[in-house]
Length: 317
Image (tube, rainbow, N blue to C red; front, side):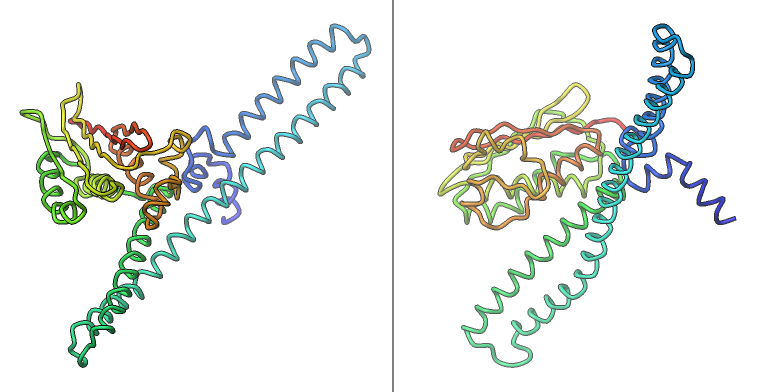
C-alpha cells in the first residue's frame, strides 16, 4: 500500500508543486512532461525529415533513436538539476522556520531576565551596570525583530502566510501609526505630514499585515533622513482601490541598486554607510504582503534627494 502511495505522490504533479511551493509552470515534474512532449515532437519531425532524404529505413530509425536518446538524457539532467534546487530551497525554508522558532523562547526568557535585573528587585543597580543592561536589552530587541522577519519570510516561501482579509479604513490605520511614530520623528528632527482624499472607501486586506507594511515604510523614511527632514504621507483614490504613498527627503537609493531593492537581505551601499542596522528583509516582506493582498507596490528614488514608496490595495474581495 505504501509503495502505491509513494508512486501516486510522484505522479501527482500538483502535490509535488505544493511541496516545493512553486507554481505549476516552474515545478520540475511539470517541466519533465513538457520536455517529454518536446522530445517526442523532435523525434517525429526528425523521422519525417529522415524518411524524405534517407532511403534506408534502418538508418532513419537509428538516427531518430540516437537523437531521441540524446534529447531525453539532456532533459533528465536538466530536470534533476531543477529538482535538486527546488528541494534545497524547500529545506532552507524549513531550516529557517525551525531555527527561528527555537530561538524565540530563549530570547524571550533573556528579555524578561534583563528587565528583572534592570528593575532593581534583585538588588541595587549601579549606573554603569544599567548602561550595559540597556545595551543587552537593545540587542535582544534587534534579535527578536530579526527572528520575527525570518519567520515571516519562511511563511511567505512556504505559502503559510495567512491573510485574514476584511474591510477596514486605511486612513484610520495610518493616522494611528503616525501618532505612534510622532515621538520618534520629533527625536529625529523629522516632520510628518498627512493628507487624504475625501470619502475614501474601505480597503480589503489583513489590517495586521498592512500595519506591518506601513510601519516598515514609515520607519525607513524617518531613519534614512540626515539631520532635519520631512516625510509626506498621502492617501488617494484609484479606479478599483486606494493608493498609499510616502515621500521622504532622505539619502535616496542609487540608480544601480534600485533593481535589487525588493530582494531579500539587500541593502543599498549608501544606506549601509549611513544606517548600519537592518536585515534587508522589510521591503521584501512588504511587497509580498501587498502582492498577496491583490495590490501593487513600487517606488521612485534619486540618490541624495529622497524616495517615494507607494502601494495600492483593492476595495473589493
